[in-house]
Image (cartoon, rainbow, N blue to C red):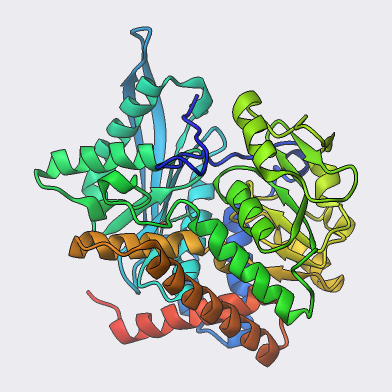
Length: 443
Ligand code: GLU
């Protein structure tokens, strides 16, 4: 089991929980890399992007695959497979998380690294896109096995990463402890202290104030701005969250504090809905999850499936789990006015089309979950200066960047009469295209 603690602990170590269930099974054939290419192609057409640049953007610059042995607790040796994809570095070093999940594949990390390029560009973070992962179910590993696997993976990809090359971070089922092992291993290998090689570290090791709930904080800013744009009241608005890991659980807390009513949540084991329509008790929910491993059966709630949650009549639907949750099979059932994608790639391109027809206001992942990488950037800056900011400074700077990105996307959607995702891509791809043209091709 990974360590789970509450947000009140000094180092929150919430694992990123993923959701299985109906959505995953129905959409298992949707290749996230193909989705990423489709999304880029939609934007390229509208913005008249050169075909050559679309071709460049459609492939990661390089992908490393590693197979490495790890000593297990019972004395046996197990070989794991991991990847690191570096999509584009026109705006700066590659940046993006490392996920531990049995479903990790080369096409998944390719897509995730592409999405990181556009996310960084959209919010104005001077990084390109990267992403890594290991094919593993971390719940099957002891803490010692996890540590040895992480350190060996760090060793294998060390020649490929670095503070000015590629900077990993947490993602699904990795947390500040994972980052600490990676940082320590990398520093030992190069023979000098290198905190800026990875972000999302514990505060005691050069992590940033505000990083643990940064994804959710960025998301709640986007939800607030979407409410303004749609002339909706956030106070009293009904919210459903799919996924109760780092992003989902902190989002429930922050949106609850902003006056919204989180009425339903699900995780990989099941879900909980408030029978009366009143807000769920977020503290009780987290306590129940810590005690039982899931939110299902939390006191004062009724059980709900993933499928039901996605079709709830709510103001805001927040998919905060994995890719391919809203697909052509269930998109027509969505009744939410706004979707804010806390997860990467939860809505497939075919589902996008259906949601657009039904006038659902979608805040795409590259905007809605960009708070995480934005505060990762702040952490990297602080590490380089070895001078740290207080939490209000972090939050204030995050607020500014998120609002600016939302406004730019919204204005671009108006200008091109297109959906928000395509607008976000037009802005993000336009900036990377400009940098690429300015650099030229050499050698
Ligand atoms: N894994 C997160 C994401 O998908 C954070 C990446 C980072 O902080 O570099 O955006």
